[in-house]
Amino acid sequence: MLLIDVVRVSEAVTRTSARLGKVGHLAELLGRVGPDEAEIAIAYLSGELPQRQVGVGWRTLQDIPPPRLAATATLAQVDGLLSRIKAVSGQGSQAARKGLVTELFAGLTSQEQAFLTRLLSGELRQGALDGVMIEAVAKASGAPSADVRRALTLRGWLPAVGAAALSGGIDALRAFRLEVGRPVAPMLAGSAANVAAALEKAAQARSHAAAQQSEDGASGVVALEWKLDGIRVQAHRSGEDVRVFTRTLDDITNQVPELVEAVLGLSESDLVLDGEVIALQPDGRPYPFQVTASRVASKLDVARLRERTPLSVFFFDALRAGGEDLLDLPYSARQEALARTVPPGLLTPRLVTGDVAKAEAFFAEVVRAGHEGLVVKTLTSPYAAGRRGAGWIKVKPRHTLDLVVLAAEWGHGRREGKLSNLHLGARDPEGGFVMLGKTFKGLTDELLAWQTERFLEIADGPTDGWTVTLRPELVVEIAFDGVQRSPRYPGGMALRFARVIRYRPDKRVDEADTVDTVRSLMV
DNA sequence: TTCCGACAGTGGGGTCGCAAT
DNA sequence: ATTGCGACCCCACTATCGGAA
Image 1 (tube, rainbow, N blue to C red):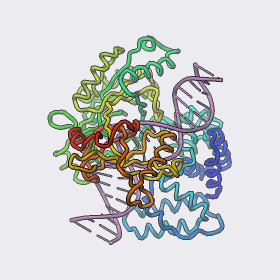
Image 2 (image 1 turned 90 degrees about the vertical axis):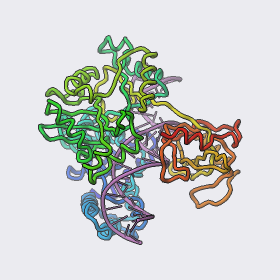
Image 3 (image 1 turned 180 degrees about the vertical axis):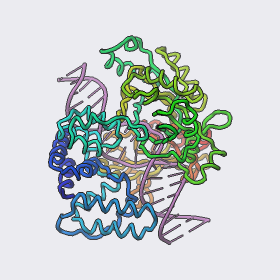
Image 4 (image 1 turned 120 degrees about the vertical axis):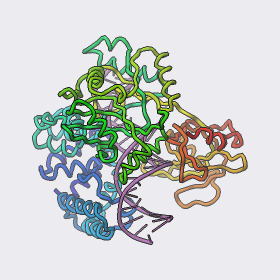
């Protein structure tokens, strides 16, 4: 199949707003792709590469050769070149890599170049990723989408699952099994504003499932687990071989020897466990997230690093233990298996209750201990990967500040033509403002339109084409998760996960929060 | 007919490892 | 030694579609 066939379908998908229409376009192409190129087509049309990453980013793509006129490149040819680029990127020479990238793009029309540029920079923006592609694979293969989704959970990689479905149908999908040593797609959590709302949400999720089973369904009892601010890990053990994977299924086994040893210390040797690694201080309180992230990301001299910054692991789920796959069992049964397998010191602290007051006290306790918050889990939910919402709901405390908008950046995509990304500053009592970071979150279309107009009225000073500097006149209420050390901003600190709550026209700039207030919040 | 769950999009800060400067 | 780049940790929020209620 030619690349241009895929590009044309991608463009049709982009033009179609209805999801069923997108699915139709994708399924039509999947119906005519050959078995040896199915994986490539599925990957490209869901915004991924068979190689996962090849070492080419936005900067490299700034400088590509002129296009040719005839579209003759096949999927296999493009895929082959990308594999060579990945191989070269893995072992040095920028020049060799650059040469191959040039060779690749020189063989493409401008239409194909535009597609591949977006694909490689991770910005396909056609309105279809895994979720839509799952439906397309189902439609093209004749298998129910639930089977596609299930296979994706177990295999963790949709192009492989889709190719199997197209060639082997429903039987091929049902042949996927949990395989120790190969990561599964991790279950994700939705969120709620507070503990009461999380319990409410869990109750609703439960009442859906309650039809078939349940005393639990009626009781309102849920599990509350500490949410640790570390790195999500999936640990596999087969005999004496342990592998550790991240949320995106990357292998970090060599970076976390403490975890490997902890798993080898368990009496069972056929295991898949889900948990969190985190760096704790000698008194048991957590280090800032940056410390854990730095430790886990470091690959060099891990032996020395672990002396200075040891990692702890806390498990909260078991997908395989006692010789059985547990994904389809209810949470409560998986917990029992986990408790039989893992000693108490390696378990995430949890409380099972239906009492809101007790839940709120538990929340206060975990926050006092310096941790991130709680995850509320229904006792009946199976391990459903990739889908946020239903079974697990996270709750975190929320801080707010009244800050001043110092500048704004023009948006992209659906925010084209709107001033979108705000530069946020705290008031310096000595005079002026100190920038603490940016945010684009929390803005409705209406607010985007309003602020674009308003900002242009108070635009002042230098503009580089991206950023519009403003007279500091507008106060905005910002929510955030915490203040972290920053090497980037002049005050040496930045807000984590900042988002807009509302503008504060009732507040003058000289009533905005000060850098001293912000500094007092830094951990 | 209305409601709501799932998805995609729009970007944020920090860190590491490596190659080029 | 420093800088730029790519990759990947953590992530919040809104708009939209389409099936559920």
